[in-house]
Amino acid sequence: MLATELFNSTYDILTLLTKIYRQPDDWNISTGLAVAGIILFARSIRLTTKFTNAKDIPEKFIKKNVKLRGKLINIIGDRLEIEHVPISLPIITYFQRKWYTQGTLFIQLAGVELTENGKLWLQEQLRPSQILWFQLLNREESVLDCFILVDQGGIFSSCLNVEILRHGLGKTVNITGLQHNTAHYWKFYKRLLKAEVKAQKKGKGLWKQEIQLNKVLNKLLYTFVLQPLKQVTDLLSYFWKKNPK
Image (cartoon, rainbow, N blue to C red; front, side):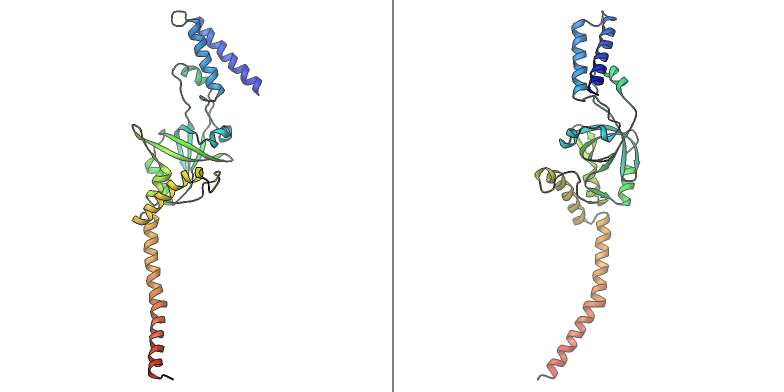
């Protein structure tokens, strides 16, 4: 595997140098060697690799919670189908394309259990071919658990995981793949909890329904349990006072 990779890299460099030599007016040997070096370095750290399967992503990327860029293809239930869009280096963009293969990644929102309204909200908020960033947290078979980031213009972005909870369109669940009771785990999990607590306090989404349900249950409890019990207690108290021993 390593030998094949080295052969491919060497072949790519030789091909590039051949193209350079054919265009002496635009390129020189020093420039060509510099570009070839950039290509070899980029491939060695998988900077320009296009991932078409979750299993192809290096484990160190997940452990370091690397952020990758992708293009939305489809939304299937609570999962997003995304085509990875690797970093493009202006000098070698043309040569990058021939390395790419076809395939998509399946991503679910880490730490969030979506409601049916939450799934509809996702469909409304996102559009096909939209560029998203996904921060790797865990991998289960062919599915990635991620924080999904949407560009809001400039340096600002919003996290879909947090926004869903903030609107009461889901509940927090454990983030699998991260060791619990560690600072690293709580760095991500506390963001989700804070958003959920805000939704609970404001009675948004599913919490509005839960508040209404609690009101109904409390009324039934008072009407059929507490009130009759109080009447019985008052009656016993009355007879006790009237017939003391």
